[in-house]
Length: 166
Image (cartoon, rainbow, N blue to C red; front, side, top):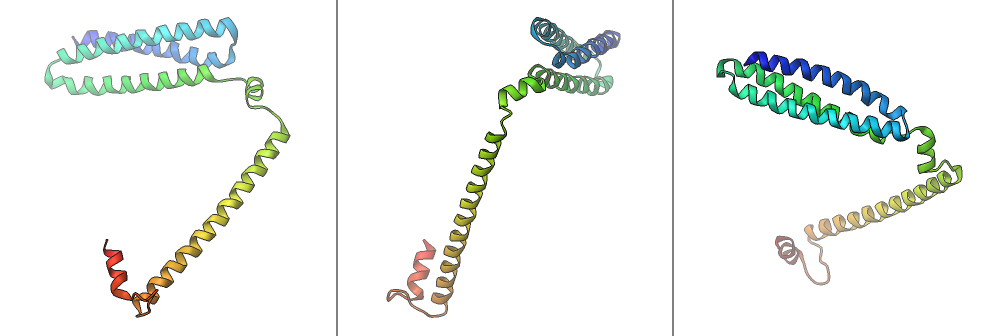
Protein backbone atom coordinates (compact mmCIF):
# COMPACT_ATOMS: atom_id res chain seq x y z
CA UNK A 1 0.00 0.00 0.00
CA UNK A 2 2.74 2.47 0.86
CA UNK A 3 4.31 1.80 -2.57
CA UNK A 4 1.12 3.17 -4.17
CA UNK A 5 1.42 6.22 -1.94
CA UNK A 6 5.03 6.71 -3.02
CA UNK A 7 4.02 6.40 -6.68
CA UNK A 8 1.39 9.07 -6.07
CA UNK A 9 4.06 11.22 -4.44
CA UNK A 10 6.22 10.99 -7.56
CA UNK A 11 3.26 11.90 -9.75
CA UNK A 12 2.44 14.79 -7.41
CA UNK A 13 6.00 16.12 -7.64
CA UNK A 14 6.03 15.94 -11.43
CA UNK A 15 2.64 17.60 -11.80
CA UNK A 16 3.32 20.38 -9.32
CA UNK A 17 6.69 21.19 -10.91
CA UNK A 18 5.01 21.47 -14.32
CA UNK A 19 2.19 23.58 -12.88
CA UNK A 20 4.65 25.90 -11.12
CA UNK A 21 6.53 26.40 -14.38
CA UNK A 22 3.33 27.23 -16.25
CA UNK A 23 2.05 29.55 -13.52
CA UNK A 24 5.26 31.54 -13.87
CA UNK A 25 4.66 31.96 -17.62
CA UNK A 26 0.98 33.00 -17.45
CA UNK A 27 1.46 36.70 -16.58
CA UNK A 28 3.85 37.15 -19.51
CA UNK A 29 1.34 35.89 -22.07
CA UNK A 30 -1.72 37.47 -23.62
CA UNK A 31 -4.70 36.52 -25.72
CA UNK A 32 -5.44 33.00 -26.85
CA UNK A 33 -2.08 31.63 -25.75
CA UNK A 34 -2.72 32.81 -22.18
CA UNK A 35 -6.25 31.39 -22.23
CA UNK A 36 -5.01 27.99 -23.39
CA UNK A 37 -2.29 27.88 -20.74
CA UNK A 38 -4.79 28.87 -18.02
CA UNK A 39 -7.14 26.07 -19.12
CA UNK A 40 -4.25 23.61 -19.16
CA UNK A 41 -3.12 24.57 -15.64
CA UNK A 42 -6.70 24.39 -14.40
CA UNK A 43 -6.96 20.85 -15.79
CA UNK A 44 -3.67 19.86 -14.16
CA UNK A 45 -4.78 21.31 -10.81
CA UNK A 46 -7.87 19.11 -11.02
CA UNK A 47 -5.59 16.11 -11.62
CA UNK A 48 -3.58 17.04 -8.52
CA UNK A 49 -6.81 17.28 -6.48
CA UNK A 50 -7.78 13.79 -7.62
CA UNK A 51 -4.28 12.55 -6.84
CA UNK A 52 -4.53 13.98 -3.32
CA UNK A 53 -7.85 12.19 -2.86
CA UNK A 54 -6.21 8.93 -3.90
CA UNK A 55 -3.36 9.57 -1.48
CA UNK A 56 -5.88 10.27 1.28
CA UNK A 57 -7.58 6.93 0.60
CA UNK A 58 -4.20 5.16 0.68
CA UNK A 59 -3.32 6.75 4.03
CA UNK A 60 -6.57 5.49 5.52
CA UNK A 61 -5.64 1.94 4.56
CA UNK A 62 -2.11 2.07 5.99
CA UNK A 63 -1.69 0.41 9.41
CA UNK A 64 -2.09 2.79 12.34
CA UNK A 65 1.59 2.43 13.34
CA UNK A 66 2.78 3.99 10.05
CA UNK A 67 -0.20 6.23 9.35
CA UNK A 68 1.13 9.28 11.21
CA UNK A 69 4.15 9.70 8.95
CA UNK A 70 2.05 9.41 5.79
CA UNK A 71 -0.65 11.70 7.19
CA UNK A 72 1.86 14.46 7.85
CA UNK A 73 3.29 14.11 4.34
CA UNK A 74 -0.21 14.26 2.88
CA UNK A 75 -0.96 17.35 4.94
CA UNK A 76 2.12 19.11 3.56
CA UNK A 77 1.08 18.16 0.01
CA UNK A 78 -2.35 19.66 0.62
CA UNK A 79 -0.74 22.87 1.86
CA UNK A 80 1.44 22.96 -1.24
CA UNK A 81 -1.69 22.51 -3.35
CA UNK A 82 -3.35 25.47 -1.61
CA UNK A 83 -0.27 27.58 -2.32
CA UNK A 84 -0.32 26.53 -5.98
CA UNK A 85 -3.99 27.50 -6.27
CA UNK A 86 -3.29 30.93 -4.75
CA UNK A 87 -0.33 31.47 -7.07
CA UNK A 88 -2.46 30.39 -10.04
CA UNK A 89 -5.20 32.81 -9.08
CA UNK A 90 -2.68 35.67 -8.77
CA UNK A 91 -1.04 34.82 -12.09
CA UNK A 92 -4.35 34.89 -13.94
CA UNK A 93 -5.11 38.41 -12.80
CA UNK A 94 -1.58 39.77 -13.15
CA UNK A 95 -1.50 42.57 -15.68
CA UNK A 96 1.31 44.28 -17.43
CA UNK A 97 2.11 47.87 -16.50
CA UNK A 98 0.38 49.07 -19.65
CA UNK A 99 -2.91 47.37 -18.78
CA UNK A 100 -2.63 48.49 -15.16
CA UNK A 101 -2.15 52.12 -16.17
CA UNK A 102 -5.07 51.86 -18.56
CA UNK A 103 -7.33 50.51 -15.83
CA UNK A 104 -6.23 52.77 -13.00
CA UNK A 105 -5.43 55.84 -15.04
CA UNK A 106 -2.07 57.48 -15.18
CA UNK A 107 -3.26 61.08 -14.78
CA UNK A 108 -1.22 63.31 -12.54
CA UNK A 109 -4.21 65.63 -12.18
CA UNK A 110 -6.47 62.91 -10.79
CA UNK A 111 -3.73 61.97 -8.37
CA UNK A 112 -3.46 65.58 -7.21
CA UNK A 113 -7.24 65.88 -6.78
CA UNK A 114 -7.30 62.66 -4.78
CA UNK A 115 -4.47 63.98 -2.62
CA UNK A 116 -6.33 67.26 -2.00
CA UNK A 117 -9.50 65.36 -1.14
CA UNK A 118 -7.57 63.16 1.28
CA UNK A 119 -6.02 66.20 2.98
CA UNK A 120 -9.46 67.85 3.32
CA UNK A 121 -10.90 64.73 4.91
CA UNK A 122 -7.92 64.40 7.24
CA UNK A 123 -8.35 68.00 8.36
CA UNK A 124 -12.08 67.46 8.96
CA UNK A 125 -11.34 64.34 10.98
CA UNK A 126 -8.81 66.20 13.14
CA UNK A 127 -11.35 68.99 13.84
CA UNK A 128 -13.98 66.45 14.83
CA UNK A 129 -11.50 64.68 17.09
CA UNK A 130 -10.65 67.95 18.85
CA UNK A 131 -14.37 68.68 19.40
CA UNK A 132 -14.92 65.21 20.83
CA UNK A 133 -11.97 65.61 23.18
CA UNK A 134 -13.27 69.00 24.34
CA UNK A 135 -16.71 67.50 25.01
CA UNK A 136 -15.17 64.64 26.91
CA UNK A 137 -13.12 67.08 28.99
CA UNK A 138 -16.29 69.04 29.88
CA UNK A 139 -18.03 65.82 30.92
CA UNK A 140 -15.10 64.82 33.12
CA UNK A 141 -14.99 68.25 34.76
CA UNK A 142 -18.75 68.09 35.40
CA UNK A 143 -18.47 64.72 37.08
CA UNK A 144 -15.56 65.91 39.21
CA UNK A 145 -17.51 69.04 40.18
CA UNK A 146 -20.57 67.01 41.15
CA UNK A 147 -18.47 64.47 43.04
CA UNK A 148 -16.90 67.22 45.12
CA UNK A 149 -20.30 68.44 46.30
CA UNK A 150 -21.33 70.82 43.56
CA UNK A 151 -24.81 70.84 42.15
CA UNK A 152 -26.20 70.95 38.68
CA UNK A 153 -29.64 72.41 38.08
CA UNK A 154 -30.61 71.92 41.70
CA UNK A 155 -29.66 68.24 41.73
CA UNK A 156 -26.67 67.11 43.72
CA UNK A 157 -24.55 64.02 43.82
CA UNK A 158 -27.34 61.54 44.79
CA UNK A 159 -29.13 62.28 41.49
CA UNK A 160 -25.89 61.68 39.57
CA UNK A 161 -25.49 58.29 41.27
CA UNK A 162 -29.00 57.33 40.16
CA UNK A 163 -28.25 58.27 36.57
CA UNK A 164 -24.90 56.41 36.48
CA UNK A 165 -26.32 53.28 38.10
CA UNK A 166 -28.82 52.82 35.25
